[in-house]
Length: 188
Image 1 (cartoon, helix red, strand yellow):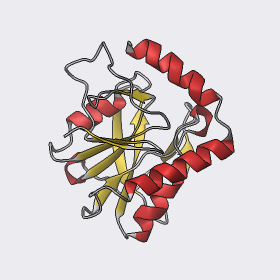
Image 2 (cartoon, rainbow, N blue to C red):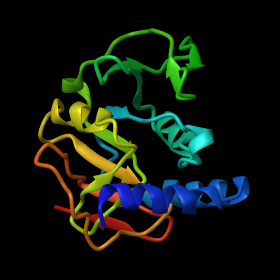
Image 3 (cartoon, rainbow, N blue to C red):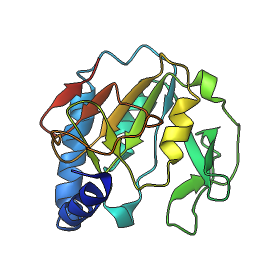
Image 4 (cartoon, helix red, strand yellow):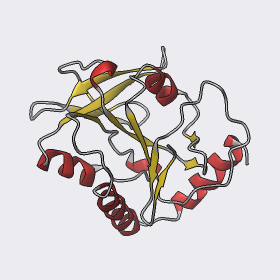
């Protein structure tokens, strides 16, 4: 399927999920993550959940990272440049929703892409080859292209893999893993 068709399909599937279902599925995803060999690094990039889009609730992952005393990095999006700036999440970080309803840090200690060792990635769909479909603005592809090659890229999805995304671009950055409530997909 094409990215456009997949966006439509998975937005519709998400729209039918209740808050309780989202919480249960998100807890299952967080528990699956504990099985991965990804807990040695120090710097983890995590997206903050856009509740209106019925995204995976990353609060559970945030709790795991905090419990393991990891440095958690969150982003702020610039819709004029299409780039993201990354900030260390601290007790003093002020989070505010932007005009697209995305929770973001107001400011803080900026962290460069070079420091990021593990990145958790929001997505709408993914395929068995590790390609992903996001919201279509390219923020994560630009961001991931500027990370170190060894940065571990992990997609989080409520749903299982599609066979193939037919219109993948050369600039699309593949996942290393995608974690669903039922399964861990490895693309290495």
